[in-house]
Amino acid sequence: MASSWYAQIPTILTLLRELQPRSVLDVGKGLGKYGFLIHEYFGLDDTQRPDPGRPVIGQSRIPVDAVESEQAFLWPHLEHFYRKVYVGRVETLLDSLPSYHLVLMCDVIEHLEKEAGLRTLRHFLACGAIVIVSSPIDYFRQENWGSADEAHVSHWTPADFNFCFCQWQRVGSSRIYVVSQRQLHFKTFGRGPIRRLKRIAHAFQDELL
Picture 1 (cartoon, rainbow, N blue to C red):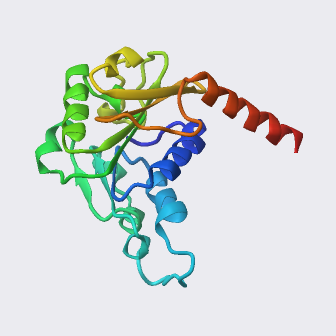
Picture 2 (cartoon, rainbow, N blue to C red; picture 1 turned 90 degrees about the horizontal axis):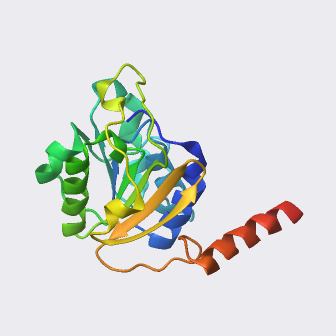
Picture 3 (spheres, rainbow, N blue to C red; picture 1 turned 60 degrees about the vertical axis):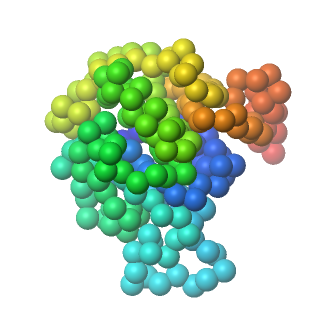
């Protein structure tokens, strides 16, 4: 996919900080922002002088791969952030993908038919991955970037994730879900009243400072 909603970036980075992923698959990587941000905030050793002659991926602690279905979105700079880019629709590539600690599906799942999306999630969970999914709260038609793969073909709600452990919260016009095979505990993420109060308190504190 070409891009994902900017408002969710802080929440996803906060989740990454708590999850401390050992390896990442970025499905529908857009321009590669999450590949870059993962290396910047979690992968690069800031006690070492970087080598500008080598791609970032070769100097990062965290291997990050990507899946991209659109040939037009295979920009040259991606080789600096992604160890490997698998080209094709994710639901057709599942058997060829290695296992990952974390899978990102940011504004991707609504581009899959519901059956294919569920099969994809179940596959990643069966391989032991934690999956972060973001998707619009409301369904709307989309035709962007001259790509058929940019069309929205499904709509997702919390009820669609009742086959696994799932925590979610609303971020702007989207929901962010964390799905896994076991219960995960986060400091501020989720719908619980204490976590919501903590987020409100942090936002209020930021406004006062």
